[in-house]
Image 1 (spheres, rainbow, N blue to C red):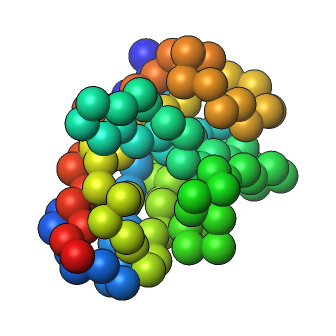
Image 2 (cartoon, one colour):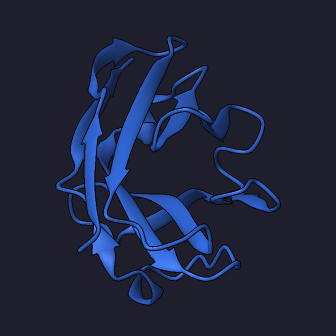
Image 3 (spheres, rainbow, N blue to C red):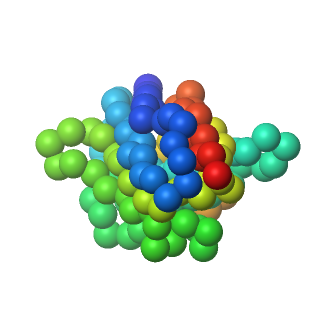
Length: 124
């Protein structure tokens, strides 16, 4: 069974940075995609960024492109979301998610593995 555990959320001021981590265990093979979604109060869960496990494909939401990057360490089963120049509208619970395959899909319904979420709050 695949397990995802996020960490790294917190309270920051606008313009500052945070790095979220997602430790993945129980993955069967390298045909796997990890994506980050976020959900603000009263809003639907939305795609933020995604990456294939081996790094051949990455996708970003328009709202974060140029500010956020997604990466993975070779030695650890950890996917990172580096968030720079944070804005108050980035405030949300951020979820790490995973699915088998080699396509970064922006639809949350296509992901079967989810972490518990980590809160990111950006003050103005």
